[in-house]
Image (cartoon, rainbow over all chains, first blue to last red; front, side, top):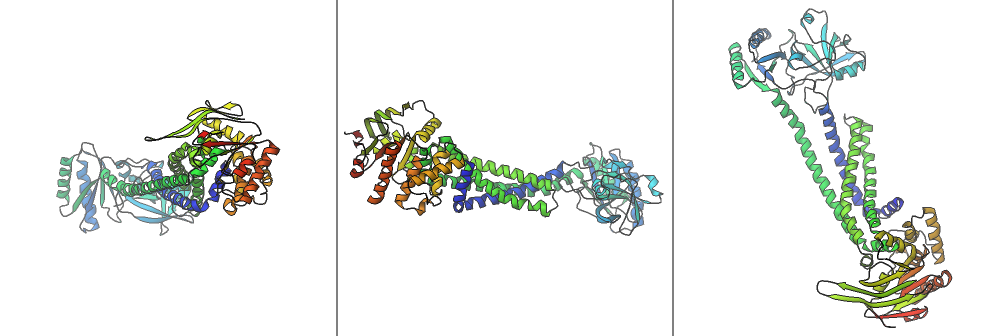
Length: 388
Length: 221
């Protein structure tokens, strides 16, 4: 019977071409949207690598103050912050803080390999302030000040690119000026650009006297409120009256960052749902029309020995065969994406999208064909045979 | 072979009731070739549809090959039609999207006969009606007479005991009509197939064993 269904569809290829094309395009739209969603969801599932709850960021606009003055003022700020019981921990860092808009990239060398990586300039308190844990080695401490090497801590992506499964702590890499850097620790994950963003290789270097960093992260107690913020602002103004301070909350920044992905995702979903709905309507209409045009054929088949359910199965089967042809064509194009590595999306994501899109298309086709097919099955053979 | 007892068929709408068949009692014996005549709208096709289990009587009893069908499911009825009955229609009723051989194979497809056997039996049936050289053609590429011969091949491919023919020569000129009639007569004589044929053509009807006349849904002889 399956061969017979393929034969009918093949013999009606001109009539079915539009339908095949319609399903083919809706498959591609679904495939694109699902790839986007699955890809983002895969990143979302991966651990963030830091805590954002009760973490405040303070950007210090030093109004062009010289480096030495900035260092001295920051030392005063450091001492002042220690006196606030609401502050559990704090850290000075450069501006590429979690959920911020800044990004610094450099490249490091490991043998012949050159690895592009985010560079984070941080102090000894960065990991404890953000609740980060290390999978290898240790975080920066006072001993690094006097060390005869420049210590760095790398993230998991960097480790994998440079060392694969080998341990990285204790290994050496070089910066772009061929200066040796010693890896003293590894943090598995630090997705500072947000949950939905693909993790990128990165490393932490210790803040030194080369340049002044301008961001401050505070891990505050949960009872830290607006009154505390007011006192904090006042104290900072006392220390650096000519600077300006901008306080933000990491959980608010996170929400805004997530929105940047969620909104386009929602738009894609709405557009594809609308397209799929239109395809479903089209499919339903074409089937309805086909069945009305083929009433005589239904009568003939019933006279030749087809049962009601056999007629229903035939029409559903034809739609599934048409869907299969469309999906075969669609899959041919879809598999080019992982094969040609068009985007930096894992092959598994593409294949999962292909499978899920195909299942959805079959479900839509099946659902749309069900009612017209049932109506076709209900036709009285004698009536159907006399339909002109 | 076919027994209609007090068969009635009434079509009812909200406002009107039309009696298509009124108290029909008819017995068609094994290997008999019976023709049914009557003016248009007298119920000939309705009677043929009831004999072919394509329609249900409003009242009365239908017995075919010793079976009654009150307790038959739709599937069992379909199976009975497939095994026992062959149909030939005035307007051929071939499926234009299928080739000649695929059209002829159709009853065997619903009998789950394997593809090779289907092809063999369909070729055999087409040879029998003189269309062995038109198997790959499509119905639209055939003349009316050829189409009707394909329809006959389709009706006989499953070797049914009964063939129900609804004006099989109605759309054909006299030469083609005679050719088709000759095939039916041979089927009746050689294969002992029981045939009930509705016709408007007195000449054709005279070639059969018995003539049944209907008028306004009633049997008049």
